[in-house]
Amino acid sequence: MIIDTVIVGAGHAGLAVSRMLADAQRDHVVLDRGRVAERWRSERWDSLHLLTPAWMTRLPGWHYAGSDPDGYLSSGELAQHLERYATSFGAPVIPNTTVVEVATSPGPGCARFRVVTDSGTWHARHVVVATGPHGRPRLPAGLARTSNRVEVLTASSYRNPAALPPGGVLVVGASASGVQIADELSHAGRDVAIAVGRHTRMPRRYRGMDSFWWLEATGRLARTIDEMPDTAAARRENSLQLIGRPELELRCRDLDLGVLQARGVRLLGRLEAVAGAVASFRDDLVDTVSEADRRMHRFLDAVDAYVDRAGLCREVLPAIRPRSFDIPHPVTRLDLARERIGTVISAAGYRPDHPWVRVPVVAPDGSIRQHRGVTPAPGLYVVGQYFQHRRDSGFIDGARHDARSVVDHLLGGRASRRSTAATRAPAA
Image (cartoon, rainbow, N blue to C red; front, side):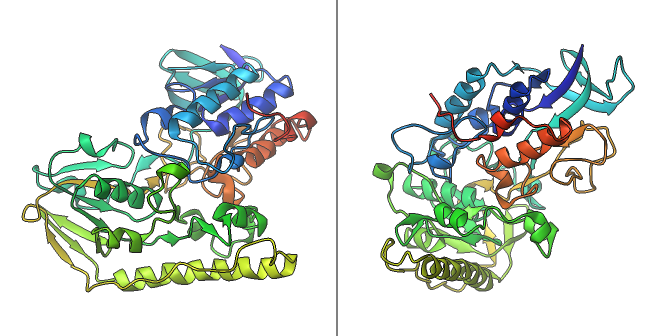
């Protein structure tokens, strides 16, 4: 089969590119191993809601038009939102089609690439990798060799407390996924401990506005990778320690380590090793929490300065900051069997993973080498990676910017003006 462009992945990033190509009347298909928004359907826990408010669910030619723009869509609601988006412009999605190889290969016509799937082969001039930033879950060293009496899961395979074996739970990782899972398990009556690594503490709201409103207003989300002194560190930045839930369900607006500790969750340092049923942890909890607090206060200082410059003092609430909390002397060794811990859940993030990309653009760490989505291989593009170009590249809202850059390059600088009007057409 011969076509101009193959997009791999029917999530928000792939659909954003598809919408722009459709507006430009460019022949293309969108291949996905499952359905539209498959990861949101099958790799998220049951109670998950987006961290970003609904008003930030902006895509080319489409935006949230529901009754609760300041609320947080559930994973199921987001999947429906993206399904409606795909239907709105007749996205040429071919579901249940797994790509097993993308390789350079002189093909018929002007085709540069051979895209092999489990149901046939495509020959394309352009390929856009839009599989998202979630590659292979990170599993800290030693977890794969725990006692067979302890079940080891990743955040992508966790569903709800009732689905876990009896006993306590050790959660590894204290970014967004880790603290949310620990919070849910604690409220379900489980004994929970959380191993804390580097994290980004952030209040859900500050001075009356959602933190994402401030991140956008102060220009933080629009910062580009070219502005960062350490690009590798910027792309390893942890997800914000936040939770998004409907207002009536909020047990506490903020969710951080202090809140978890007050509810009886034990705080531990970074997981260092696991030998059989014994886990050891670094004695670094105080330093890790202190550094997270310093980074949070630097951001809130910037918000206060912005309020003063913009003359918003009368428009927003007074500055009341999250308080610090006391940390008891941390435990550095935990016998999982003796503590009756039956499950370990790794919420340590993901590693880039593109084994099916057989084009020399994959870096040693598994990421795809690119600048603004353009790879060293002519005709091969990528969208939706963490901090691909802007800080918001990994968020749903940021994919529209990367998609525009990619499509503009693909079309030779002639991207559709209609496509760039990213937020004018509301969602149904």
